[in-house]
Length: 117
Image 1 (cartoon, rainbow, N blue to C red):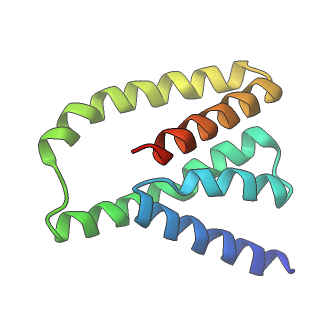
Image 2 (cartoon, rainbow, N blue to C red):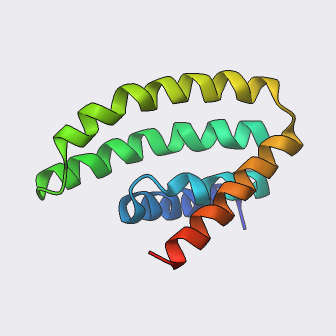
């Protein structure tokens, strides 16, 4: 498959997951970017760059159909921003193996949790 086709498929699947799961596109984007040849840390960073505009578009649609909870967003955004800064700082300092292990563990926890919700 050509790179352009792979990247188009990656973008489409990430956008679909992002709209469907609410910013869950990174779960798909990171492994696919790795498979496309990105270094692991660049795959994580690339996933963020990809999901940022997708999240904005998804939020606008959720806002338009009345599914957006302003009060929760106002309460969570400052802490989310602080977490993003800390996570970015830490990612530069940890090994690729540890980063991949943490990501895999979070995927397992999220999967098991979602099975029982």
